[in-house]
Amino acid sequence: MKVENNKVVTVHYTGTFPESEEVFDSSKDKDPMAFLVGHKNMIEGFERELIGAEIDETREFTLTPEDAYGNRNEEAIQEMPRDQFPEELEIGMMFQAQSENGPMQFTIVEVMEDVVKIDFNHPMAGKILKFSVTVIEIRDASEEELTHGHAHGAHGVHE
Image (tube, rainbow, N blue to C red):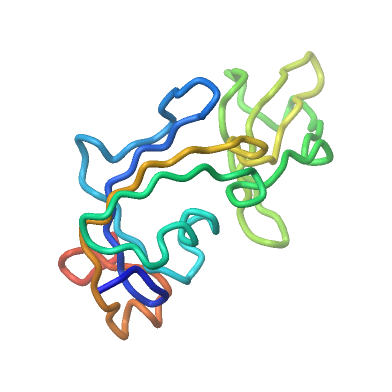
């Protein structure tokens, strides 16, 4: 069986920044990650690079921002009144705001006396990402998983 759309794929992975080889995320020493292919559960380039892979196959690939979390958008940095935030506020803190498109995360990038500068860009926007991914398992998705658009856990529930 090969990785293709509508299959649930379980992988072990390590993601690094290629310029420094710093690890930004890994399933090493954790449970492997399962996802439903073709349902936008993963960044586009990650899925595309795994299409056709088989069990026990390891693939290494580098993704540009366009295939990962997009380029940074300087218009996504905004200022909000300081009094709309809690007293204790630090640069790097993440919050969530409601928008017409649903919840959006943002990061605090600067705290001034009357204003807080916030960034709606994904923290990985604009970054080149390198992955090493080993396919552990491939299985057909259940009808329920296909209907819900995501993989369910070992006991048939979303985890």
